[in-house]
Length: 116
Image (tube, rainbow, N blue to C red):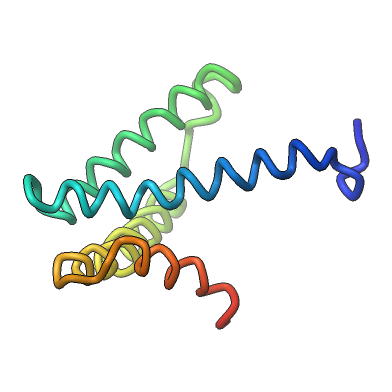
């Protein structure tokens, strides 16, 4: 196992590039879908597809036992998901519907860790 402090530079750059492309494409996707589909509905579908993909990966790697959750965990997931989809991405989508450029939306969201 390699020391994480000495990760190969190429792999780090590739990982960052992947995050930038995937992250930015989400806001571009919202902008492109706004003419045909309600923005919040499009994001809900995006989250559902992502959840299904992650579920398949977890099932393949860990087996069905890894998907067992308690009622308390389900409640926490519902609250977190509602806040993330409703407030975080929902308000971002509404700002784009109001005319905010997708690049500006992505930049503002990316700057949140700097401000907190």
